[in-house]
Image (cartoon, each protein chain N blue to C red):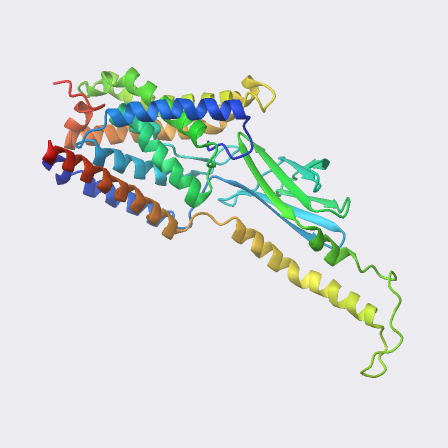
Length: 206
Length: 197
């Protein structure tokens, strides 16, 4: 999922960086004191998740955790994921410094989209709707990331559909795993710290 | 702040650390290519840094002017080899698809080191100052080089494995420490702002 240096053309890199900067600034504006530790914890989780590697399918894929990040952080996912990606690029040589912007958008934008899609439902009582939306939140965020990677590669690879199909198929196991993980995380948090799900995005709905 | 400090950070940190412990033979997501010279052949090995071999991926070779001189695909063991096409710095580029790409450079000197001395290309020295020997100096040199090639092959492979080793625990913990350090800095400035205002 991390796009390496030297793969993308300059316009894609610049566009990615611009969207990333916009997202990060929205995120930073909404970050208040209470949110900072939460951002840091999820940033660390994201940082480590890429090391958990699922040896299924044709390619080498790893956990992303952007669904859970999105539902707990909203727009704050942008700064959170950006910090983790920067450290991964420097310490692990995952991705690259020039592709940092594109990679941030690839993983953080689906997080924000899933936040808006599912934030209402995951706060419901533990009914079918909660289970379904928690699972889809984890799975859909990975799926959207795959689509964004394919979109970023349009300029270099031959056809969008072929690449998209290839990436989505490679990440199918990850989607299922992330869906289940997101579901259990949210179940746990709901039982132990329900206010985590209430207080998101720098605005308290109460 | 009170409710944040209380209960959830500590278990989460514990969870993070247990993840690190389980994965200390860390598996990662980065494509790598490693190349070395044996005789007149360049061998390359391509892997994901978790150790999974990259099958049927495109490998392209460029000369020092940046022109593509040959390309091919890795076999089902992630290997691709070719005869040395010309005496130049070789830039070997692996394109693993899905945005993964890796490079390996082989300097001209490394190519020459193995190829320059071909059997019969240099006249054998008549006699060495140490006294009469049955073999000429060049012949001995050739034999030694052949045997070194064979002996060093496993070492070249070991080096390739080391190149592809995933992130170490130190780096992982360092990264997590960095993130929490940043959190501390952010909290410090936020709390100062609050006290002043």
